Image 1 (tube, rainbow, N blue to C red):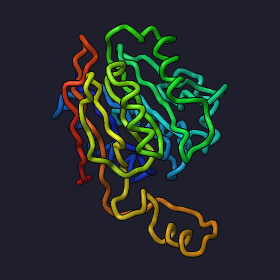
Image 2 (cartoon, rainbow, N blue to C red; image 1 turned 60 degrees about the vertical axis):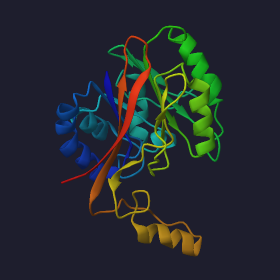
Image 3 (tube, rainbow, N blue to C red; image 1 turned 180 degrees about the vertical axis):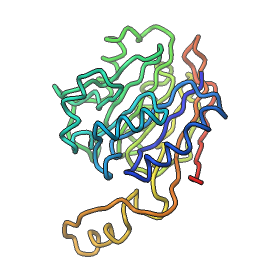
Length: 256
């Protein structure tokens, strides 16, 4: 089974890139499922119902998120309506759900705690969800979006879930890493998938806006940058019989 994971999609430029690139990419690589982190698709902060549907209509099957899932309040009531949108599972008593099973693929969304909000333990939450879903000792395809800041925490999650899930893929930093590998027990791992958004930016925002913050120490509104757009993604090939990953490959594509 071939699964594509798309890195954090930033605003209108990122949505446009997904719309223009994904269709051909699915056909070219015979992709069975597309997962995308969509917590920044609405103006760079959060997700709305309209932007969620735009991603789904562009060919995304499951939308994951992170700490910005709550930024657009209008989406919150819809998180319990069965749309394929996830929020991190280790938010305690929050609306929505932290995992789903679609076409026999389990997709789990977790968030780290290092340099991030204080949530329930993502490691214990992962074990609980595997048991709760009946997937703890049953071979199958399980993809984890671990939305975290620290590479050490991400790597620790990779080791913790090695052999228990098909892939642990990091999101959040918007900077893609080059440490993709198959771990000893068959789990594909990557510290960060990266960003789908403007190349000439600071993690998606206009450089001048970010520089103003750094140089003055004062609050300053961030806007999504313009210019060329790249889609950072990773392609997985997974054995459906065992749930083990056969390969992991970065696909970083400029919008034409």
